[in-house]
Image (cartoon, rainbow, N blue to C red; front, side, top):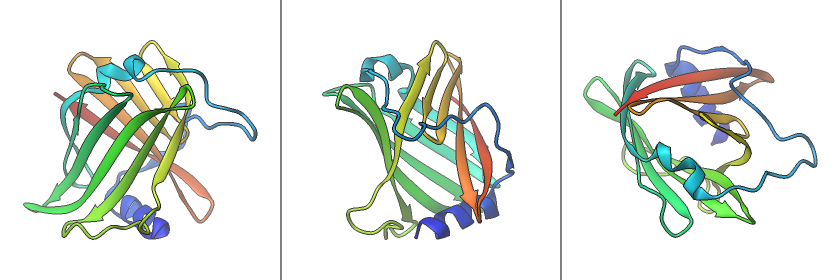
Length: 163
């Protein structure tokens, strides 16, 4: 299913080559200490355009060591797919996890499988998870950059969101 998800991302996206926007944990490297409060700026109702359609992410404020979000992509007035996302505190750091769903809520990943992005670094205006970056452009604008791999080739997808 993961290859199918990547195929869809490649099919719908305007993809550019990977850059300094994406960071990865080195082999054996552990995620740095962090708390959910450090990424509170992600909370909000965000809308943008990607994959040839309208994208939307709704992030809750931090509570009980986590944040949750829903994502949807709308193409031609129809939902193409959904995601459920969480950022949660794990062993003194953060991890972003998500699951994909078709427009009928049938999951892409196997029952207990999630796509996981452990924390690499937090800076004043960015949160770098392993393969996904959130950039705080302004109070009302954020960018999310996602690394995708297809047949060994790495590319990135840029989502620009406004509140």
